[in-house]
Image 1: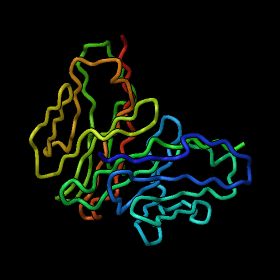
Image 2: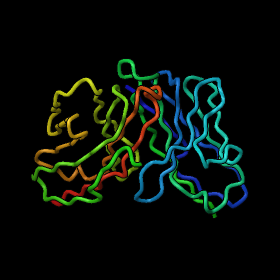
Image 3: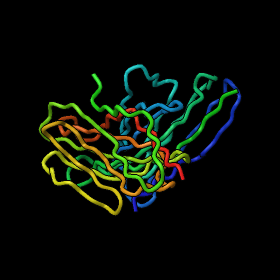
Length: 119
Length: 116
């Protein structure tokens, strides 16, 4: 159980185009989803937290107009990188949890990540 | 200040050796959670364990064991009889109940290479 699917796994796009990344919880309802960015050989940097049906909460320094997050259902969140530029090239990872700390609900289950290369 | 410190950036061991990955955390919350995740070269983070702050019992799962010591704010991870498939980056993470228990603070990771 607790499978999170992230799609696509790899995307190459031209500078100026927008890219959408999907994150789905396949066998549980994800009340909260997270989007991270990871640079080579570095730790995960939290970009934003999204709760189903409400606006995402962005971390300081993350442009919300640049990285659009939609959490339309309890099983799907999307991250759209708008007008992508080469500096947006990175590894983007989503995670999902079914709730807060009670029981084991705050365990985050991660997708396989998306490698974005902007030319 | 770094809430989770993994001082070992890279470790190399020969297959079948035991290896311990260190994790030191910092929090003022009395209720918190500690996690270990494995990130193999494929990129996906695999959940290994969650421990809450009230449970200091050490845990063993096959070749994996975890030593949680509140007195030293450490949550170390030991792999016994390491195998090549254990080669990965391992992340320790902390979440604080005072913040809802959802937001994770990740360490910088320890890259483990097991040499055949």
